[in-house]
Length: 174
Image 1: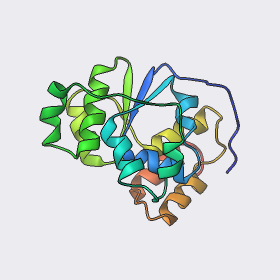
Image 2 (image 1 turned 120 degrees about the vertical axis):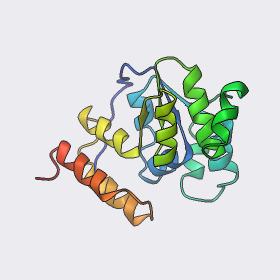
Image 3 (image 1 turned 180 degrees about the vertical axis):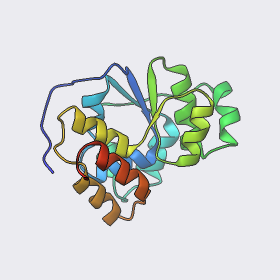
Image 4 (image 1 turned 60 degrees about the vertical axis):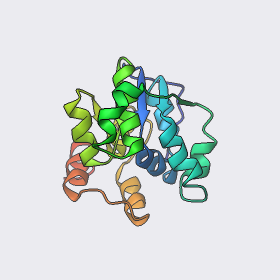
């Protein structure tokens, strides 16, 4: 479960806009910095910041996220946000709305319903496991399986079929 340090080896995606649960998951894994290694900019909306660092104070991930000086907090356009707010929770709605106004961005969501909504609005999505997959392919981490176990041991549900597909894809499952 080693992490190889590399300078910003950003992909072609200029920005990633994160929701709360993936930030918390990556913080639990002590791998938040993967976001800065894979993307040029890491944006979060105010609702996500509040959810993780204010309402979630003292909970797993809160301190690590609050200390990530590279996180760029940006407010989404209220006109884009309003129709989304009735479909998903506030943090997810703000993340999707912000992603709609940032060109060449991808939205980081773990919740299946929020991902379906984002995709309906034409957004590209990735989740925590997808970030780990990209990180392994970029040579930033050596294995995904130990991180999956750590998340599961922390009480985070990951669909078994997703785990199997990703582990098979990266050669960690025969």
